[in-house]
Image (tube, rainbow, N blue to C red):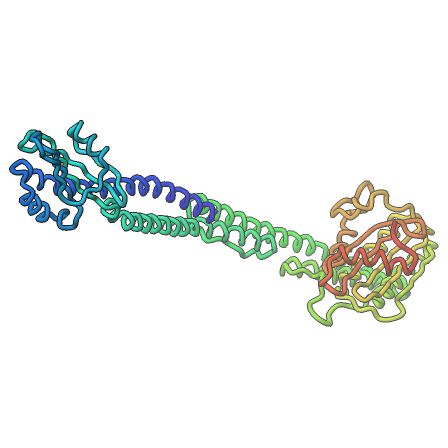
Length: 464
């Protein structure tokens, strides 16, 4: 917008300057010519007075020499011969006009201008005492005709250039006044899109942009309010779960001793911790999917072994074969332990919830240079639409599903720059691949290409 205004101002100013400067320059040129020939006519008129009195050569020589043009050798007098026998024409001064030009003036006794080498000749006819027509010739050099024109054109060019520069400067200032509010609005919108909810725009500038700034600030305030309401709602809903959790904890305490009782009490305690985490997260509005800094995170192998030990009891009750691989050594990942636990429980819970009893499943962990792959596979019927399954809140027609389990897994993977993919496992059912990035400088697309081409193929089990 700024440069558009500058270009418009430049074009308009140039057209206005040309519209006035060119005609004015031509007028100045004509005025200079008129001034030069008016002065020549004045010189010729001074000699005309002498010619009307006498035709004596001596007196005329003195009269010609007394004039400015005559003293400069630029005035001549052409007197025709009288009708007396032996009379001859008289030429006083140095004439430059041709005989044809002189004859033309004699035939039509009217002042005329003829071009001569180096300038012009003013031919002024004058009646003498003999009744004949004498011609006074005044030479006007080219320099006198164009005197002052170059200076006038330079002045006009300077004035025009000053007008153009001034117009461009004013247009640029006006453009800045228009563009700066628009740029501030764009930057604030970008900041708001990046999650900086405190971004606001000064309500100043032209009326239209000021109205846009007011609307943007109002929208940002509403977004902040809506997010605050959502956090409060999530915290309130989570807080309501504490009462039934307290009942579960009391009931679990009365179960006595034994593996099942211990697992039940551990599950209730974990559920209480998750509810507390949800409440704190909602209150603080801070993401909990990524590790806090260098050295943070957890050991994926340890978490996988712990969760498989938890689910193995239920698998044994349902007659499911379980295989675990790749957890014999520590594998550090930049994911908080509760988040990885929630992701594994979501995937393993889906296996028990959506496959028949007796269906085998496996969990594999592959550690690479820039990523860790966690594969959860089963021998169930599989997922008909893998892409739809990854959509948040999409539970399809399955009972007991909110459609948020895979979304939890996806957010955990994407917080590290990785991703989640669903395919067909070698067991015949579903395979969910969690790609957890270890180097945030690479994007998910590049990791996907390298994973398919090397590490996933190495284990000879790749999603279809």
